[in-house]
Image 1 (cartoon, rainbow, N blue to C red):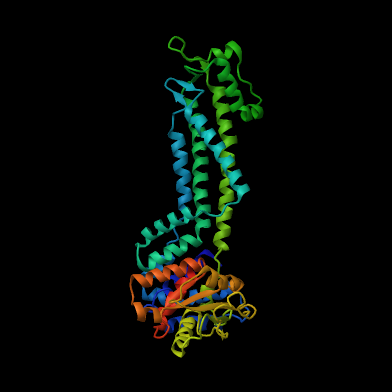
Image 2 (image 1 turned 45 degrees about the vertical axis):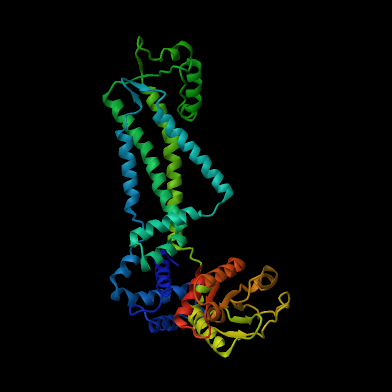
Length: 455
């Protein structure tokens, strides 16, 4: 799946997480599912089927709302940005004259040694990061989401899509940010080299150093160590003894030695330590960004996508805890599952599991996903429902809490919210939805289930 296809898939997912409207009706959703199934062979990969459904949907959506096209066409990246970063870095380096300390070429220039030191530290950090192989941080995803939501308008469909895109595209954004940073840093160092050469052509620079605290031997050793790669490659050697001490600048002894060899050594050092490594890192980041854009790592195995497929990958297996649901509740659950997973999803019903049998529930059919139906009025307990969820963990259970009876007794309000919070705390990461199954509105209940699955 390409980056553009992934954007269409996630945009459609964000749209279908909302109730049907004139923009995208329930009939439109069914049409897209059927049309995608007809256009592709039955054995087409899951990614291809989802991408085809999104493509067909966009053919209807774009003419209806211009905002859809804007969302599809604003990925938060322009290739020209790389060129801008390179030009800005190069010009900043050329324009800088910080290597010249007043009237002489400063061998202890904070800019030169700061650039070298910063880059060496960054390389060390990259090595540590590569050894640890960390995932993209949640902080980065959060910042991306905030930025994309602001860019998209901050509410409604743009905000919903921005959150999904920030989460899915964090690795791609990270690679593209690395392109800009490495390119700008390498261009800055190259600009310093070019600036040194240009100034050396038209000015007669004298080289020297000045320090209140450092002795000549210390400075000479530091320069020899810091310029070692350039000295080794060029075959040069630093002056020693009195020759080096003569480079010291004081009010009584201005700089007098030619800066030509020092300009050559320092330019070569910038080339070896900054320009070349940053060029390699830029190429690596470009390759990674291109790979991610061509083969976008969108996780389409999530159950939330099952409802997009005419032939879902997993059947559902419903287990009621405590007592069998009423006929009205069973009908409401069927409608909710059809709206949430798709009208063609196979649903199997197990016999109710009685209290006290939580450690030994029936075994779901191979490959089926469990739907655990509970009564919200029941107090959630780790020793009871918690053990049952552990026993069903292999079937990736979805917990549906029927709050019909609870609402009849206590009404909507704080008590309902508290009980739902207690159940969510027990369920943990598993999808959880609380709904009145005796008289549900199928589309609303289905959306609640979809949101639970998308978390």
